[in-house]
Length: 263
Image 1 (cartoon, rainbow, N blue to C red):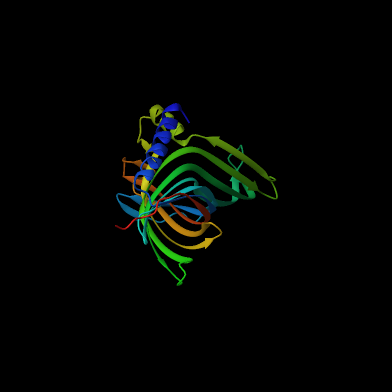
Image 2: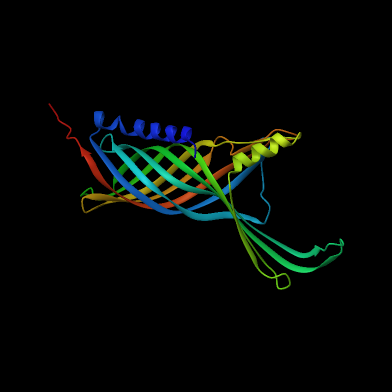
């Protein structure tokens, strides 16, 4: 990541942290981690189209740090910095393949691939929580908001299995945006735009219970691109959107407590 992106991320972190001491009543800092399931939505001329049968969701891990600003007894502003893996899994099977003389032979070849695209995510949500017991130790909450993200890197893993050709495995690491720009610059045909900075909507629900001096948080969240991950306009308008369903657990401790005074 070049210096420009590092400066942008550093500025975002400063902006997130500075307002809190001014108006905060309770500010919690925590960590979170869990599993994610990402998939892809495709549109042709703004109409959704089904994916091929060989494509399936990609299961991976996610995690990061959390900040929760308590605005009142029920409302809070929740901010996170997460490492998120987006992509797809694909399985293809070929019964026969051509040889060097263009003659077909029986191959029984299965190819499995995992397309990982790593992002730094910044979800920003408003939470509404309500107690589930009289002692205010168990809570349930709903959250709604948006996120912006920065694309970091891609990793493509593939493996082939065949009783005739044997088993093979490979890993490629690359920058998909840089590669797409080079292809478009070299070609005179339709161009594809892939954004390094991404944004979308997020919604979730969860459960919180008090544990020791902090709070334990079980969260289920759904993210979906609003800006297309990739877009092309010729000969037809094709857009792709990434979506992520994640289940995480976290723990946070108060780092700032300011008593609300009644006069």
